[in-house]
Length: 241
Ligand code: 6GU
Image 1 (cartoon, protein in one colour):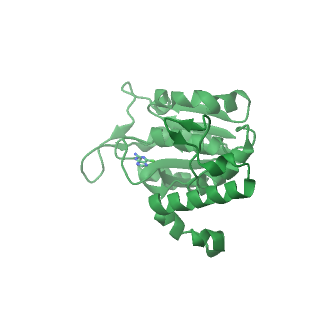
Image 2 (cartoon, helix red, strand yellow; image 1 turned 90 degrees about the vertical axis):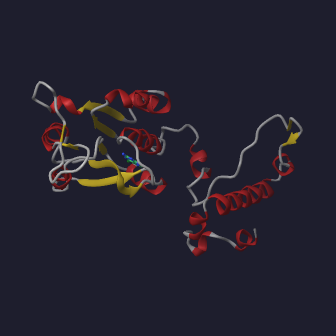
């Protein structure tokens, strides 16, 4: 997968070269490039923003550098899926991550200030799929942190990036529930034992216990997720918890 990120703070994206994402890049599973939007400015001050038409507080990102950036990075025959982080976008979640993990080319346009001139997105929609995407219901200074989160969530779903594909099947949000708590050795730590069932070797009982814990935790922390599950997602045993 090719991933391009356009930002006025390329240093902000440095963590993408670390850890598992960097390893995926080293192994050729992703081809990641971070671009400085100011590359596509032509004045001495390398201006990317200006006051809002119609007045008001803050600054809006001017369209010209964005237009030139897209001209340089987009191959019209094989356009990317453009993601524009914004608190005014659709909420990012695991199902969007799964969809994005199947794409050939993702491009992120990081807005700062009060956002990007709307005409940039309107024009981009003529040639590519454009999704304005939000991490959640709070406001950040800009899209860079959202790009870190989205790239990490998407990359780990690309086949070959994670060593153990089973951990994907069992993790939170894969089955619409939060994951059960985990334990390791020692069997007793500061008078706190690992739950007996996990040391029993009884695989069916362990699976039932984990499922119960996942249901209880989801009911406690995320009742909205339980309410949104389709009827067939919960068995009779699940409903008895
Ligand atoms: Cl994607 N951008 C900004 N600026 N703020 C946010 C966000 C994105 N998601 C939540 N808050």
